[in-house]
Length: 269
Image (cartoon, rainbow, N blue to C red; front, top):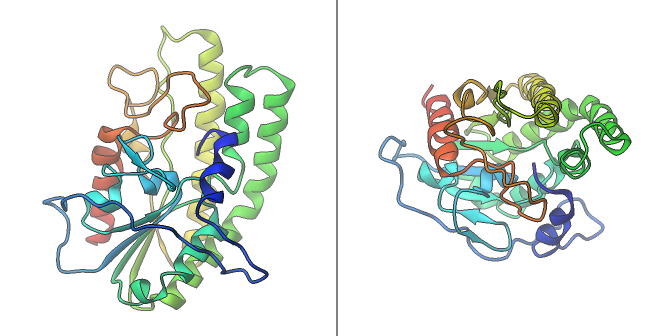
C-alpha cells in the first residue's frame, strides 16, 4: 500500500521484464539487522512481498526497494526480499530469481495484494477529497480488482510451494490504517471509514486465496487496534504529504509489535 505515483519509480529501478513472465532482476542484497531474540534460529527463513515486507516506513530505507532494518523478515533473522510496489506477479518473478534460496528455505512469509487492487490509486484520490468522484471511482476499481485477487494469491502460493516444497508458507494481511476517535474531524472520519473498510475487504480476499492453496493466513488486524492513524500511539505513518512513501506504512513499532509478533507466532505453529 503506497502513494500511487511512486510505485513505478521504485520498481523500474529493479525490474527488467522480458517476454517471459519470470525475467526479473533484483539489484543489490537486502539490508539485514541482528536477528530478533524470539525468532527461530535453526531454520532458513525468507520474507517476500511488497513495501510492508520491505519495511518501508520503519526508518532509514535502502533503495531501490525501500527496505529498512525494521522490516519484519529482518527482525526475525530472515532474508528480506520485499520490494516497494511489488504485486503478486512481481513476487513470483523475484522468487524465480532466487530459486536456490527458496529451495533451501523451511519458512516463507509473504505480504502482498495491496498493489494488485490499486490501493495507491485510492490513496491518491481519496486523501485530498474523500467525498469526490475521483475517490468513488478509485474505490469502485478496487472493488472490481478484489474479485480477482483470491485467484492471484492462490496461484502465487502454489508457485512458491513448487519452488520450496518443504517450506511452511504464511501469507499476511494488512492492518486497518485508522483508529476513529470522537475528536477526529468529520472528513478524516470518512477517510478512515473508506480505508478501514478497504483493508477488511483486502484481507478477506487474501485469506480466501491463501486457504484455497493450502497456505496459512496471518491476520494482523487485532494487533494494530488502537494504534492506527488518529490514536494516541500510532503504529502507522501519516503526515498528509502524498509525496512521502512512508505514509500508510507501519513505523518501527508497528513492524516490531504488529508484524514481527504475528508472523513469528504463525511460523512457530
